[in-house]
Amino acid sequence: MGMPRMTLQTQLVLRALLEAPAKQRYGLELCELAGLPSGTIYPILARLEQVGWLDSSWEDPTVHEAAGRPRRRFYRITQNGAEQARDALARAYRSRKQPLPGWAAAHPAAGGGAS
Image (cartoon, rainbow, N blue to C red):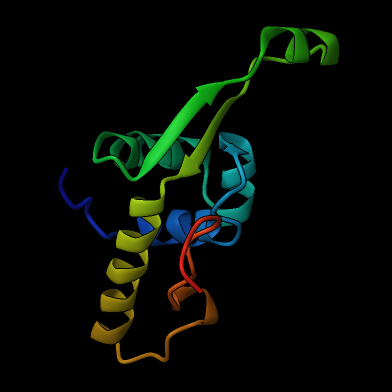
């Protein structure tokens, strides 16, 4: 696993994913949340998945067929990916000397972790 390039666009995608780290999001939803076009989002998602920060899965065919729309691919940030993304975003903010936003704080692991 490596470190993806921390472009502004990558940072916007990571922030969108970190808003609700346990939630699966599909590509066009992430376009809306990040304010970026699909031609920018999908290559970023592919790079994040390649370095192990994201997992993806295809929607059940019966769901999209019943809805009469194309099949969606869902993305979710991994626990390790969320930790690394928070660290990378914190470094990016520090380099610009801006205060850290609330989502950059470490979040306890969901389920089974020590309190």
